[in-house]
Length: 136
Image: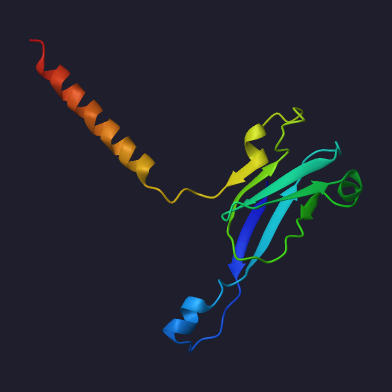
């Protein structure tokens, strides 16, 4: 996975609060670029998952791969954000030595993992402090 980018189309200014509430969300222009490293050309399915639970599937054919080592996906502008891009979602091909770079997920907006890590670290430090008081 090489590049995922979204940009909003600027809207007109000077709207009232009622017009803003009724106005549709601005369209996003998507730029998703996939790149292959190597000479093997196989038809590769690519799945795009959006924040409104819709999915789009593309296939990077052998003919398209002959012309270029990269491909910009032809995604139409839309209002939803891209949540994930997955190459070979059915895992039909196990030829890649590094499967971690076959997917991209939007960064989580939750701070739950940071809070969990902080709590774990605090409990561990309390445990170490307790063990340091034992002994002679």
